[in-house]
Image (tube, rainbow, N blue to C red; front, side, top):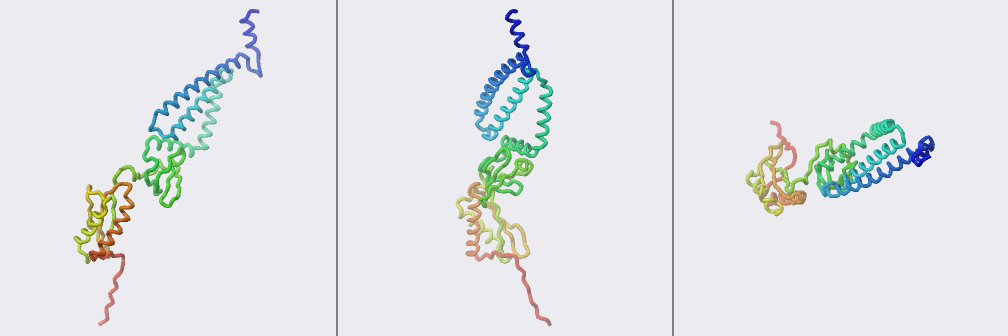
Amino acid sequence: MDLLEKLQALADIHVGGIQLGNILSALLALAICLAVSRGLSAAIRRMLGRAKKLDPTLRGFLQSAVRILLWVLTAIIVADALGLSTSSLVAVVSVVGLALSLSIQNVMANVFSGITLLVTKPFEAGDYVDISGKVGTVKQVGIFYTVLDTFENMRVSVPNADVTAAAVINYSAEPVRRLDMTFNASYDDDTVAVRSALLEAAGQDERVLADPAPMAAIREFGSSAVSYALRVWCRQEDYWDVRFHLNELVRELFAQRGVKMTYEHVNVHIQNGP
């Protein structure tokens, strides 16, 4: 018996119902797959590392997804080398994947919505946003949740699926923001005097921008007062400080000019009988 026949006889030996030759082929296939997977993972890691604008969370998710895919492919290749039916293995993987996706469909919806948010970037960490009435500063955009810090120092976690389905207002997207304020004055007060006081208040705050210029005008005629609108522009980071300061300035100037800041009230006139 020559060497080739001896090797063939050795390969025909069965170990647990599997030929020794198939086991050796499977081990070789496993070694090659591991080497290729390691090389591909390193290449993808370097490629993602060069994408400076890519969110770190998304980068980690993509790397994990690639690793899982490579392990699944390795398992199929090794099973085929062992002489096992890969079609049944693929079917099992498909069934398990389908059952898993149905059981965690809400979780997966949040995951894909998180990827959408990380890619499209409607807002970033540090932006002040309004997401369907949930208002706060974005702390983190994760795979499952978008985390907001509110003015009340509360942390709100909004499911990403709800974020992508909602109308999102990003107040930090532009460097300059318009501030709209409303003040009530008596019908007896002169319109020019009221407007002059409002514009003077805007001029006394150096954070109010000169261009676009501040504007003051009658907003509407109420049941017990005339409503005036004051519109100014300021930098995004000065918005709330300017609002609070203008309230104080307008109150002081109205008092100096004798302008009455009216409120809802009812005048009752009692008339004596004949």
